[in-house]
Length: 304
Image (cartoon, rainbow, N blue to C red; front, top):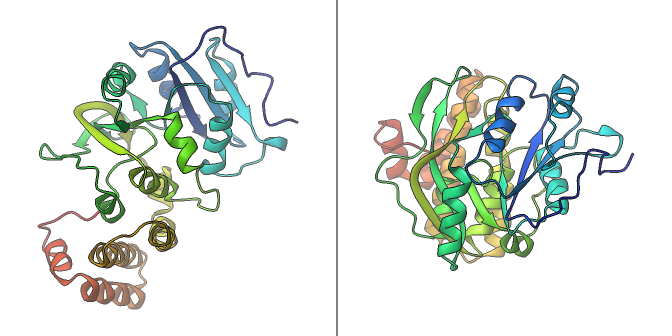
């Protein structure tokens, strides 16, 4: 079977935004996620959903939508290749001036695209704009805001590398020319591929932030961020190594990021009862960035 399924549709008008949703076994949330796109106040978009080899009812839910703007793609043989490969397949077929990627368990608020498209149209020097949002539980109950009120964007690649504070999926809108310049998602990564892409984008273009809640990030036990935390932080060293070879980062930024990764792995190992390994990561984090490690341990600073 070809990568492009029979459900791909050619639109008769030019589209401003290509929305890409990579989906794998998301029967509980995918309908709400798609509806949050269809109900946007900005309607000049195409919606590309990539079914990454789902084995639950996800595909049937996708096929129940009757909207010419929706295309359903899949890999040959309906293989499961991971989120990076799914997004890349969507990018290959995207026609929009702007790209928006939405995780299949999250959802947008109605004005998300309208506000971000208007911003990029008014600021030609900005390549990516991201917005505030809300973390919610599986029942959509509010948990906490994604960013504090004092969050600001300064377009500093070192800050993006060190703090991993914005997401290309779900909360961002990026110019397609920026994606073409930085290249596709790294398919060798099954976790943290979003941070890898964010770093590459920050090295290439100016960023902007809108302090308006425009999306909901759903916290639930099956989310990738919950089930692959240790892989995410292990992958962080590979991502950091790539970044160092690509861009001239200050040594203090590199040390600080390594400290963050070791501290996160300390947390993962401790939760899993691997106390000896946990202590090793904690000591390394303290050696690399003593001041920040003390602040984090005293809960005076959140680590990302």
